[in-house]
Image 1 (cartoon, rainbow, N blue to C red):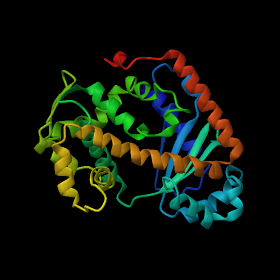
Image 2: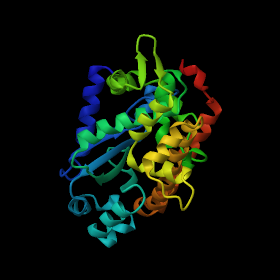
Image 3: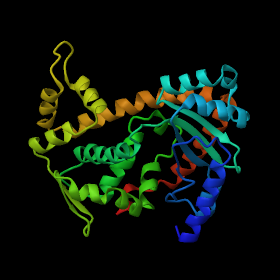
Length: 312
């Protein structure tokens, strides 16, 4: 985007945020209404829904204020009060209160979720974890395109909506027109990663695929993923420790496939429970309307069918 475009969108986002309670620790916009995706014109992009995440310190207080300020945004759950809304938000699915088709400036989707007290550090850690998981699933020699496609696909692996409800080319479309954004986010991490050699001028990477290298990478994965891998590999009743199991996986030629399976199992369960919860939090009518839009977008995408090879 040009500087004037950035300034204009910044004004728009601040105007939208001003319509919600100000007790927000972190807010960010994302999705096809913010970052242009391949096959989408600027005009189409401006018509797309804006997606927001609000991170708040105290969900009960925030929902209390928002119920007073924007009661119409809520489904029938508003009758249960802010404490129950916050409980539903935190205890089920992905710990996110999801709402869609919120009529703010005509095109907003809003979510609110709990804030991690060490959010900044967590964001950096998340980027590093994405790289670690992705290089475990990639061959010894690969391109930046391959890596960024793998990273962008992490949150869609195992998501049932990729079978019905999402454009099958979504991951490739995200990456193709946002390569510079990916490089900005990940270039320093790639340079500092001891398990790979990054050649930015050539857009190439060499990954350490030795059992020792893969073991180091497996030990650096988030604990939840390590536990999922452990459940997949360790026969019931054996109860070996995680380090022993990951050492075994590191020596397995199918190490990358095991990691992929672990990620898919995490995404699958949360995508199903969060989608079911979304019917309650957004309401049946809005869920149906939003799903119809997604299906139409999937149908249009299936007619384009861009190939991954076009990334290079």
